[in-house]
Image (cartoon, rainbow, N blue to C red; front, side, top):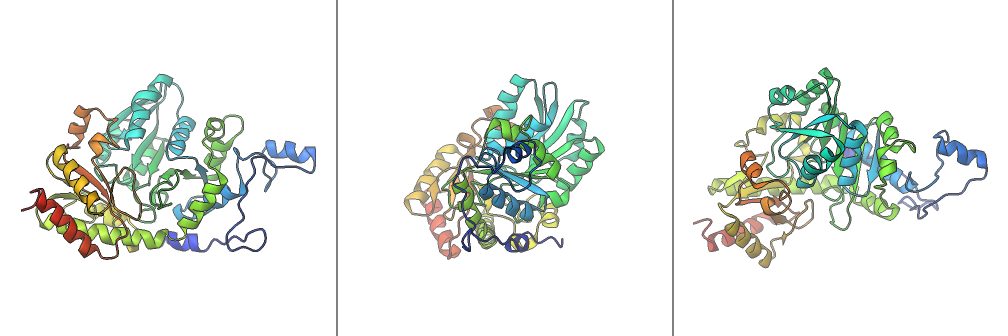
Length: 400
């Protein structure tokens, strides 16, 4: 694939108001007009480059949206105050009362809870399917289906969606394919594989410092303008607006994303190979044992590797908790949810990020009690990290 997402970010250049190398931060909630007509035209969407009110848009937010659209290869992007603040408006913009959507059965717990428990209150219903089987996805389509939703790399089981095949199905049935690419920025470019809408939680890898929450929606100019419409746009009317100061902060961190993703991937692959060699049940897309390894290898922008997310299964929740506490006590990372931080983060998804999913459904999808999800950090000496983790596992008799 000739698409170079990191180059697209690098090629964007903005000057600050006084010639600064960082664009000026627009620290205003509202903006003045020199004429009443210009205000009217802006309300009507007929005035380019004019700002009305920061819930609508601001220069800082537009700079960040432009950069992420360039990274994903879409016409436009709109940033939001959180990842869920990106996911839910997209669903409301595409689906209304009486509509149906299809979702992967393995997705972030908050998204699952919204689709399972909240959307039905508005008469929007969802079928949860095995997204790795395109024939199952197509069989679930009804006359009321408006969209297919999946994560490029699923949370927490790291299942891989065949985005190109899902896109063919979506186009055949005139429905939208929406892909959450939070686990694989730069590594994967879903829009180039046929996704209609690409979503990220900016909180994670893109920001990388776990000091803010944020989200983004990447799509066509037409769809983003629909979301922003003052009359019926879900982003505009639901109000999940990102603060300008946070947008400027994330914009700075975005500039180092290519370096960070390469190191996350390098470290995760090293640890995954070591754990698997030692006999641990390890899931990582970069391992040949991963059922979708070949598919993922064909889809990725290979200079960025296979990503920083991996799982191991230590057999029971008690053992998982013991190991995570011991690793934290040995400064190997944090027992914490989220991902994309410069330190390794680990959690037991069944009792944390996927706890919204009922226990019987967790078992059905293969989410076991002893599963630990790792977001591998930027450690310089990953061999040292492995040796320390190995000692923790031996101390708890997980490894012999």
